[in-house]
Image (cartoon, rainbow, N blue to C red; front, side, top):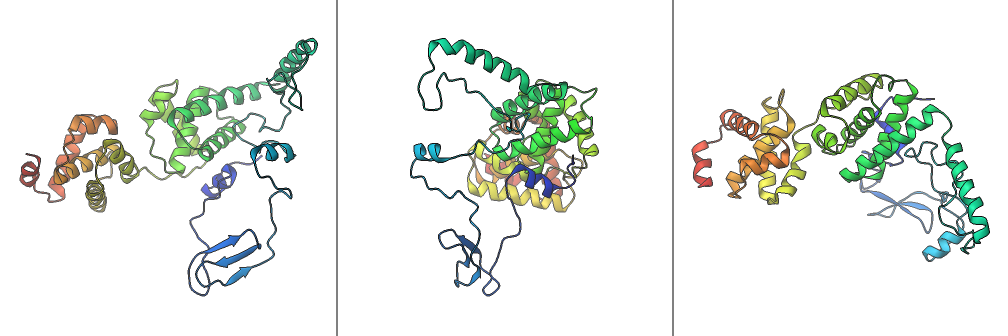
Length: 326
């Protein structure tokens, strides 16, 4: 039994090899790549061979289409944290066909149905497995509604499993801890999802998710950095269908605001919405405060207050913005 102690462990667990350090050539400083045909690690610029005779971790057989791959493969699906038993148990398919693809005779269908029933009962034997079955299905449902990637789902499932192993679920709702695990995974992968968006797809309110998130982040030592306004900028710009010029201006405004300490103690979505509104006035792309507030999930009053703070402290001429907006 082990617990999450660092962000590197989360990445290794999720199965996604994300590295901030890229392999570079010792001669010219360019990137190197792996040549699968010859088993060499070669520089893409000067051609220097850094390593040779690398071990091929793939299968020894070849397949030229999906049917050959299905017939020649001898292993099942990879281990997944999204299944309560990690996908290591035997599963009986719901299709009434045998291993050769032929239909099962009608006399044996009743027996196969009973086998399926007992197999589903045997896979879930105790309360912990029932807890994981319900929680992981909720995680998968929420992640599907938010259109999140697979490695993030695996990461959230691992966080929830560690919370179960440390008995952090007792006295709290399963849905709340599952939603908090998903929000923690979004923060780790820097995916811009707010608590409001998580609460919309979850079956608990925002306060319950925030309370569970603070508790599991402290108990599991997740060490999550605060969300920045720039994390939401690209997404909001895309949803508002604004230009690249507006994106650059809003990004510069957010950078200036963070350098002068205007973002501390303020909601990141409100700062981002105000910077976008200022950018639309400068680039003459008309977007109302109401529409920007709806996309960023803040109130119009928040947009106006943050906008007023930005133009006062960043020496932006409000008269100039008024002329541009007319």
